[in-house]
Length: 339
Image 1 (cartoon, one colour):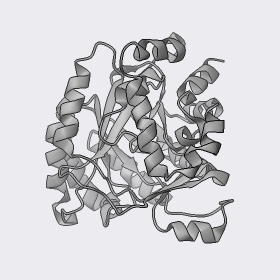
Image 2 (image 1 turned 90 degrees about the vertical axis):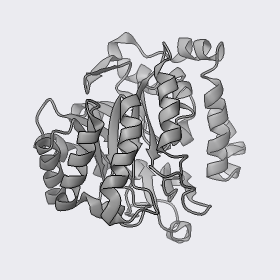
Image 3 (image 1 turned 90 degrees about the horizontal axis):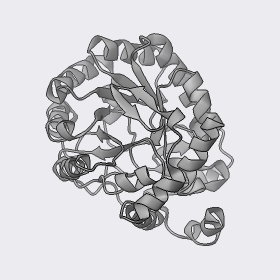
């Protein structure tokens, strides 16, 4: 039914407009009695319960950052069967992001290109929403992904991240430092170990007891991955999220001229599958067994999630495939994992 709706209606809409319409439905799923009906249909099997980061997850499969930027749909996504929701990316200073259009579908590749630019309502607003959700009896594990405010110079990035951390860390179950989005000028340069060390050290101090992770790009070299993994362990981080979107455009089925016309941005979805898996294996081999690794990028089916878990992921996140699979995606994945 959803695929028919996508082909006949949603595919004809601007992707960002379609996302906002979808979020209205997702938010309704959080409202009783819809919440209880949805949970009855989608609640993960108890055998999928997973422990990581000192937390208990209903399922190892959750929603990656970028889908619910402002923490408005997390309870609805929980109702649909996701084991955790990572909200954001959130910045200390509210910002509109890049000009539209900034989100593009590649249906032939089951992929997306985005250059959203961290559009969000700011850390203070999101922290307030997280605080209210934490008071709910039935809620998911809530992660928060933080990034650099666009108007802040890269030289002042550490103070900017710390400002977000002080607002969000007390009301999040875990925190992720995003230094790997390709859509904020200069951001990926923060992945250099000599720049990243003081940033992570300062954010960890500000985060207190909240588990802290760092999210890395799939476009790093093996030596860069090894360096960041060693740094994350050395600075006492709880884990790494592997990976963000890619700036590569290789191996796509979509016509090259169409892809070029879409312009700059991060590619996500199925084409990222193998590279993200390779990075996951590299990270897992470089860190201790009790160090949390969250896999993201190119996952769509239960088989994909099982593959990531077998490769050493503690948790797995998805986003792009929601656009093509629809609201019962988490239920399909969870049932497949049990089988």
